[in-house]
Image 1 (tube, protein in one colour):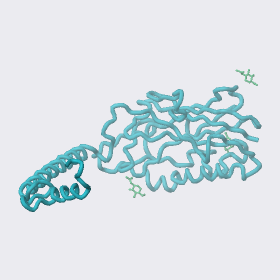
Image 2: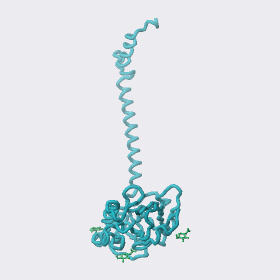
Image 3: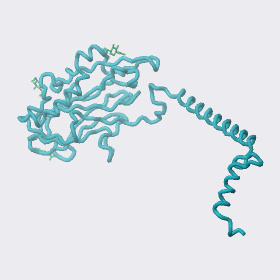
Image 4: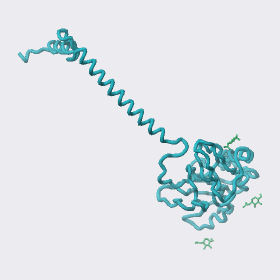
Length: 280
Ligand SMILES: *[C@@H]1O[C@H](CO)[C@@H](O)[C@H](O)[C@H]1NC(C)=O
Ligand SMILES: *[C@@H]1O[C@H](CO)[C@@H](O)[C@H](O)[C@H]1NC(C)=O
Ligand SMILES: *[C@@H]1O[C@H](CO)[C@@H](O)[C@H](O)[C@H]1NC(C)=O
């Protein structure tokens, strides 16, 4: 008998299971049972949605949009260099503008935000040598200190729009990454030094720094871009005036100071920048 159950019998059973006219059941349950089960799931999901919404609400209400919430360990800053066109190999021929115009254009563009008129209009003059602490409410706008590009003197691009590239005395600009609330240097300014780690230092000769060889304390702390609206990072321009020609020179510029890491084995941008230069 069992053997003789056909496909049609099986289908008939299934249909009967889906809709049982004698007992008025759908999938083995009558209307009341279905209502109860739907009600149960409705209540369950409403409860879960409520729980989830409450958690998200609780989380969001403890997070401030102005400062990061968890900062038990402030990570030391990285540095970036300008001009940055592609890669960290700078080779050019001073007499051929096409070999360095990308560099000077990149610097001009980068320094637009530091134009003297803009800085004087947007920012205030601060007292050097002290942190610029602003005891205002978290959500209130903070003032920023002027950093005028004319302070970069021979590397400002004002008198020499080629930033020294046309004379074989190129300028580079170093910037420290912003960290909200970071009091750089813990009271002593962070300094910048450049050397040739694998070669004789005479290959680069004298190096000049503008406006000074450190990041003044008055540009810290940074209060975050929502409230520190006109903030511009302080810069240190590096002027190489005696570079040996026709040689690949590896140069390393570091920031030095309290809580700064600049000798990490694998992270080349943590507190330092390494690049090569070849002036033909
Ligand atoms: C930012 O600059 C604008 C434009 O000059 C100025 O109106 C505004 O007051 C500045 N904000 C702060 C907080 O200094
Ligand atoms: C800076 O520029 C001035 C004026 O052009 C020049 O006399 C001086 O030698 C330059 N300094 C360096 C280090 O190139
Ligand atoms: C670096 O080069 C200069 C000049 O070429 C030389 O007098 C000096 O001894 C060299 N220093 C080192 C550490 O090799």
